[in-house]
Amino acid sequence: METSTSQTIVMTYIVSIASNHNHEENFEKIKKLISSQLSASNINYAEIILTQPIGTGYPPVPYYNTAVRFSSPFPMIEINERLKDIELSCGRTPEMKEKKIVPIDLDIIVADGQIVHKDYSRFWFVKRLVDSLI
Image (spheres, rainbow, N blue to C red):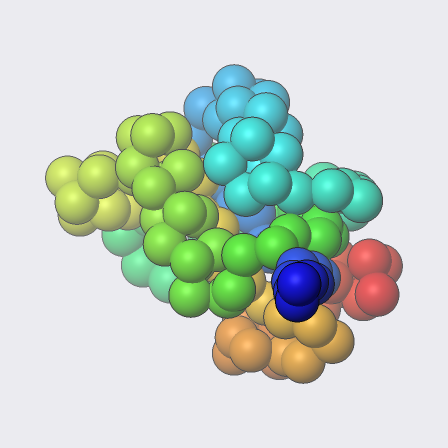
């Protein structure tokens, strides 16, 4: 009788988190959803950095920025899809986006040690937060 062993591949991700609306409530929601929706383990959060909006037309309120490192058995494409679902559940709708109100913005910055998003080199605070988790 043959036995087969299947091995689960676990990847490590670092995701940037930003909000300019209802950040306290949404950050708490994110903490719960990261572990439940992404089957995440080894979860570590960076500090929170406040920044002013970059660009025009944004409400004159600060952005709350942080990042999270976690391990998950899901491939990057599925993590990204689940992150977009989490954004939607926190109120990130096309209408809010049009008004430049950001309840939550989640982007995969690093996947298994590889930088995969331009925000790492584009924004000093993303680099600082990611570097603190590497």
